[in-house]
Image 1 (cartoon, rainbow, N blue to C red):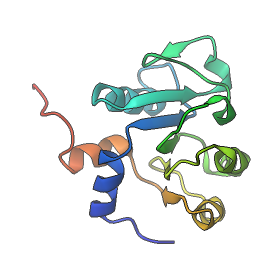
Image 2: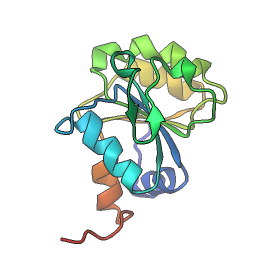
Image 3: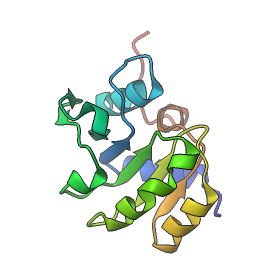
Length: 146
């Protein structure tokens, strides 16, 4: 497992305009809502994936039930699923055409077996990191008005 350094994180976040959020949520207090909301506000296109919310539109996009329903290229699959549920999604991620450049497991989420499979397929895997926190820490966000 390669350690992801800040230069790599910066490159990922500055060259990946389309993000599929696996496990997106509609409740504003949940990280699976406020993290993609922040990214959307920063100019990323967010495509939410959660079979529970397919009747909804979040961040200007209809929520998809599965990754397979996304027909366009996605740069990052941002994962908000429990670590034990990750293997259920590996096949779907590998079936995406084209494949995403990056699969990002959010803070608290690690699955080494899934990461090995994805990396063997040429996909960069970031584990146990928050896209929002890294985006802000690396100074990529618009200055806050507070």
